[in-house]
Image 1 (spheres, rainbow, N blue to C red):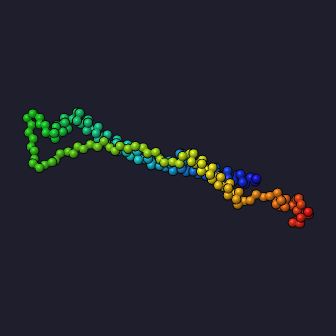
Image 2: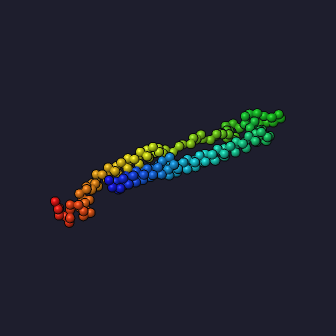
Image 3: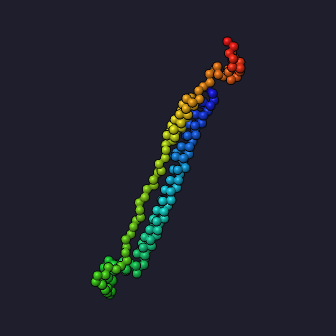
Length: 162
């Protein structure tokens, strides 16, 4: 059996495995790009949550220590201090809108990858297919044809001696 019949299928199998693993495997290029996009999405959500936290923290500090803010919130709830008079306007729904949002709950999504065992299996199948194709389309040289090409044995210049 010639070396080509072994080396070419092995090369095809290793090449297929390498390309599959490099492109689509657990540490491949495409899953890494998906992970980077997921990282960016989560970073944007964290920045949004930090902005909400800063607003809520400022409101909390004002409500904890600023008497004017406390009075304003109390007036919105209908409380009145001693010796204080409020004027309520009919059909007036003014005031400060106080809808607080806790942000969006997000979970990290794992990118879909081709499992390592599948990359190896495809490499083996590619090698087996290459071996089958080489065996079918490259018939092995017989002993007689080798002697004829080498010019030795019972054949001399195409004239049989026996």
